[in-house]
Every structure is written in C-alpha cells, then in structure tokens.
Image 1 (tube, one colour):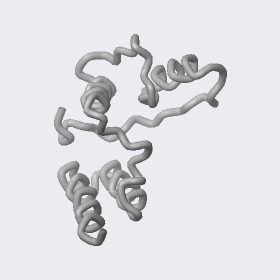
Image 2 (tube, rainbow, N blue to C red):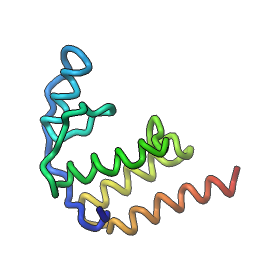
Image 3 (tube, rainbow, N blue to C red):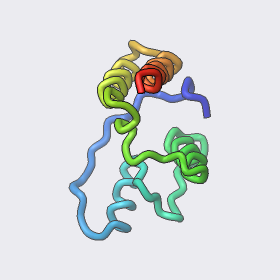
Image 4 (cartoon, helix red, strand yellow):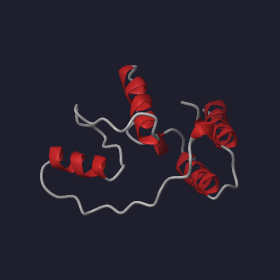
Length: 113
C-alpha cells in the first residue's frame, strides 16, 4: 500500500458502544473502523482501504511499533496530525506532504530533546 492510493474517508455513523469488547469490535469493524484489537476473523474485502489499513496495522504490530496514541509522539503531534488530516481530507494537502509534516514535527522534537 502506498499512501497516495488512499481516498478521503467515507462518512461514518457509529452506533453507541454496547456489550462486551468482542461485540464492540464486531460493531466497529462492521462500520469500517479498525478496532484496537481486531477479531481474528475480521477480513475486509481485498483491495479496499480497510484491508490495506489492517495489513499495515498487522505489520507494525508484529514489530512492536504501536503507540498507545499517535498524539503521544511529541508534545505538538496531536495538533500537527489533526490539522494535516483535515487538509488531506479537504484535498489541500498531498499524502506525501502529510508525511513530511509529521516527520518534521518528530524531527524537531528529537532535536530539542
């Protein structure tokens, strides 16, 4: 998967969480969201963005590369990330530029530490 193949996310409506974690994971997956711990039988249609996201999540997870939340990366990362995703979704920012902004935020933080 390359970031440039992503399309803007489709609008989603989420029902309120109910029941057990396993049930909630199924509800999230049924509405196009990736649960934090996907069900073993969760298989999005091949060639979809959902399938690409799951594949990449598995690859990162297998290498212990997951963070509890992306906005923990730096002190300003939440602001950088949310603004960049909004610009990407609005077509005002390319996927490559989004990646560059996030990397720049991280590099600045590393240099200041």
